Length: 632
Image (cartoon, rainbow, N blue to C red; front, side):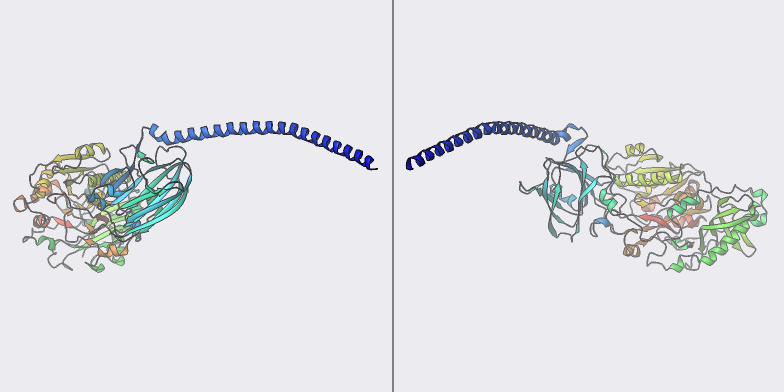
């Protein structure tokens, strides 16, 4: 029994050992196939990873060197600067300025985003920094801003290829805005994920700013020329992302007569010129010989008639003069318009109807100025009228008088639409502002189809640019360049020299550089400047501070100065300038100020009536006087 169990035990052990050996052999055989498969798979994966790594390396190398292959790109960011723009009321209060962004007053290239790198003189300025940033490693980045004053920053994704120009359709990724008090430094950090590619960046700062960054693998460092670049072009980027984010609407839109409505006035044809011989003599005002008044020195300014205007527009924005001294009541305006249409129906022998009042003004002699009783009261009327027979609408512009015998037409007060206007503009080291004036004139000329205005630039040896070349390159503005060489600046000598360049039948107008000009400016100049009869001196609104402008603050419009007693802008026919004698070089050869008041004395003493009233949208912008004339 024991032997039998021993044999059985031995057999079982042998079977177990045999089974184990078979299992081991199968396992070994099976693992060989699996190991081979794993090896092959690993080898293939390794090759794939190596290929991917090579592709990524190639892409990275291509990306990091791509902008260098483009001839239109340079390292660093552009930095445009402005010195005559408001720096205290926040970024969006600065961007309204007409010089921004197309006409910077200075330019730099920043090789790193630290404005302390520019000169101390330029640090107190509005700065627009813009260009592109290259990201070769996608990551979550920390952006760090250190700044005083106001700062606004925007990042926009442009794609994996380099854009040839700034595009308003770039995708915004990051935007930051904060206003600090001047000389008070702040720091701010922000996390943003940036994928591989290129980003347009625009930064506007009212003072100093330093921008650093880091990703999760690196330490904080200033953005520098290894990743920032700009387009190599002489032109500035006219499109500003930040300006487009702050869309400006006028706080005081013109309710009665917008700039667009002014243009619509000229869309209608004028009634054909009437022939005086075919008009009843009774419809014309009788000729009045006004004796030339005697005018004491600097007293002529008080003999200029006060003007009442309809419609209201922007006349009330000042504390200097109450509205009743500026505004012609609507009931009176309607009465004058109706009587004028009746008069013109007889003059043109047509049945005319009033469609709308565009503009009416009248001089009120003696009512507010006791000395202004030299010239008789008149009305200047601009209307839209409809011809009942043809149903056509026409524009009409006439001087009329309201006499005891009825309304009459001032016979010799007729506009010469072909008169050439010559703008006499003296300048000294104001190259950027000259570019601005040319920009304004180009805009007005294109919208009004104006062709009979010539800019006569009187350059007193400026040293900040090639003025003659700039005029020649501005094809849309006819111009004449006169270089004046006076060791000591003399405004009257320069202007008299400019008057010599104006033909006898031309209108010479003294004009400043730093102006916003309304669209009807030159048409109004021709209509109100009558040879031998009138001189036109529009009153402008002067902004005394770079932070004042109609677009964004009610306070500004209450603190501006209407130059009611400032006849510096003056237009007369050359023949009348000759009669008056031009500017007084004997009295004002080396003086600044007073020459315009003395000129007014002689204009009135010659019997020429000065039309001087507030012209809406005619602004003088704030500017620094540094390096101008005798300001060094």
